[in-house]
Length: 299
Image (tube, rainbow, N blue to C red; front, side, top):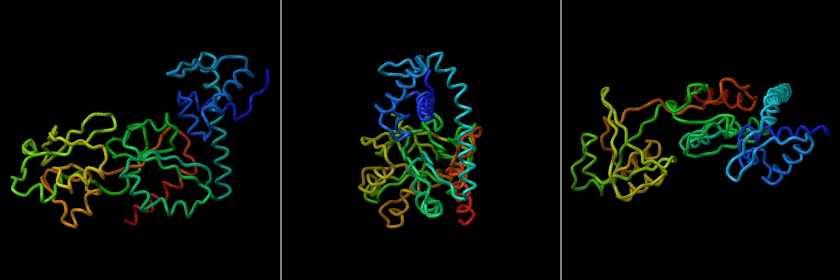
C-alpha cells in the first residue's frame, strides 16, 4: 500500500466533515474536480472505498468512518502544533473565517477589522456576510456573529456593539393623513413592508412593553429580504417597515423617516461573536477576540 500524503488525508477529512465536495473545495481553496481526483487517488492508494457518492449526497463508508475517527484527532493536534509555532513567532498567520449577519459585518468592518489587518498582516480574514443561520463547524468557519439570543447554547459568546433596537419606521408622506398606530394591532390597518427570512418564511414583527409581548403577522403588498432595501422602500413611502435602528438612523436624522410604536420597541441584547467551546482556539481567532474586547472597552 502506498503511503498517502498529508494533503490527501486533509482533503479526505474536509469532505468527510462537511459532507460535501463543494463546501470542502471552497474551504480548501481548490477546485471541486481537483478535490475529487485527490479522493479518488487516496482510495486507490488505500485500496478501499471511503465514500458513498450519489448526485445529491456524500456519506462515509464503514472504512471511511473508521479512518476519520482515527485521523481527526491527529489533524487537530497538528493544527495545535502549527498554531503554537505561529505564537512563538509572535505574529498569528493563516486564514480566519467568520460568518456574520450584515449588521455584525458592518460593525466589525468599521471598528475592528482595519486595526486587526494592520496588526496582523499575515492573516487572511474571510468575512462572509449572509442572513441565514449556519452551523459554523460544519461549514468550516472559525467563528460566527449573530444576535446573542440566537447563539447556540454550546458555543462561547463574546458580546459586542452594545444593545440593539428593532424599530417601526415610515416616511412622513406615508403617515400624512393617516392615524398613527398606537398599539401593535393597529398595524393591521396599515400597509406594511414585509420581510422574508433566509429560510423563506415571512418575519412576524415582535414587540414588547412592560412584560407584554406581541408578535404580529403584518399585511402588505411588498416583501423584501434586505434591511437596506426595507429602509429605502420606507423612505420612498411604500409603507411601514420594521428594521434594526442602525440601518434607519441616517434617515431618521434627516427627517426622511419617522418612528412609530416607540414604546413597544425596547432595546434587546445585541450581537455576539461565538465559537465552539470544545475546539482548540486558533491564534488568529484569539487575536481577533482580544482586539474585539479592547475595542469594546473603549466604547
